[in-house]
Length: 238
Length: 238
DNA sequence: GCAAAAGTGTTTCCGATACACCCATGA
DNA sequence: TCATGGGTGTATCGGAAACACTTTTGC
Image 1 (cartoon, rainbow over the protein chains, first blue to last red):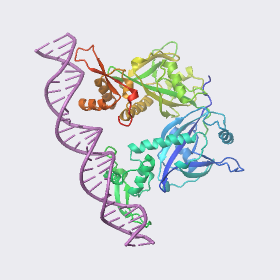
Image 2 (image 1 turned 120 degrees about the horizontal axis):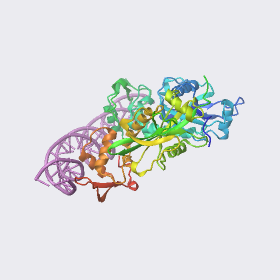
Image 3 (image 1 turned 60 degrees about the vertical axis):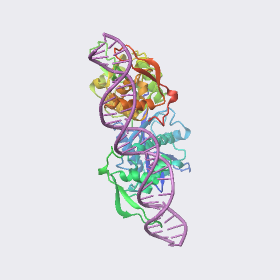
Image 4 (image 1 turned 180 degrees about the vertical axis):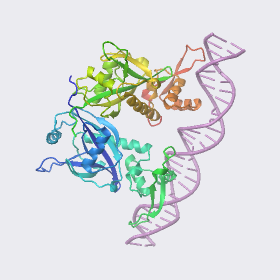
């Protein structure tokens, strides 16, 4: 048995967004090689930790570097350390191109966030060729063990949503109660009763109706609300 | 900026027990040097991860090696990676004695468990000179950042106890409802109403009264119960 | 005027809380 | 017989769940 002298440590970010009534996750398209052999590989944004930075700092930096996402709240949720998690052929191929120690074992610390998609300006850089939002139920095979990381992240999100008023983070500043309900139904994967749901939301002090209605649709326009963080009451609301 | 070629990865275990109406945590007394300078250092059981083992395996192995605890459920709860988490003078002193790369940064993945104290046979070995149960509110300054890890572990336990029927893991097989209540009160740090608490517990299908009473005390003997895992109903109980 | 989505109230059930006295035992 | 901790029942409140029709708009 040999002790781990040459382990690499990375961070990976699972960032959720919500648009067009679909829950999406932020992925990067990895640069693979110059011939661009059509062999696109999608991955969670993630990279190695620097020598002198904390894990949280690393997560923020890496996310910024790869996707240009900045100033988002990131929360660590799990670490993955299977010795074979980066040993598939495609993984190795990529690692040999981009890492100094492609054979090293990599242990990764994963972070999660939920954001209002339309408020950020994404831009791929570093080894990210592109940045894309993919519906969580249409995610293909990802690099490394990123499918597993996503799965655990999704579970984490579901747990969060049951106990904290976090879903407002996913909606635009101005949202309708129907959007909010759809979001809940999607994340919890079950239908909710409209009247009960509305009553419950309207009882939350931080949920404020605006003098404005949503327009553009050829239906009865719906009331817009916003979420006032200053009025959060974490004891009473959930 | 230099990438992390020489990071060490370790696991640390926060094991909780309950006896004499006190919540305790399992600590090891580190061997420091041969002169045994009276400078005892307490630490969570933890050590470096081997090259070819998963994090979970490492946690089990390390716990067994240091304390002889075996076959306990271990759950990962957080990773700690501050670049300076092992840089205090005493930490360095110890590392230089026991580690090949004492200057390496160490990132640690922490695990938690709760056990029935009296059912295990503890025995210090490896660099553990002794194994001790310390009441959580009497824990002195520990090695490295272990006080912080313990704090986070304790918070994790509190969250668990609110949502899962885990406190039975901490009590002997046969327990009284009063013991159970005391345990709750200690972990949640508030008084509970006896009648309400008992009604609630007795409604749980897995809580089974025995034909036996506790004796030895010079009072009315209390009814003993046991927790039948086969009858767990995780939807109904909490 | 009609199709489509928005919006609205009442009842029932259950878990959570509050609260005070009698019981069984060993000394 | 008494001191000590063990054990018991009821009433109230509030949140969760079930349930169906009317309203507003664009076309």
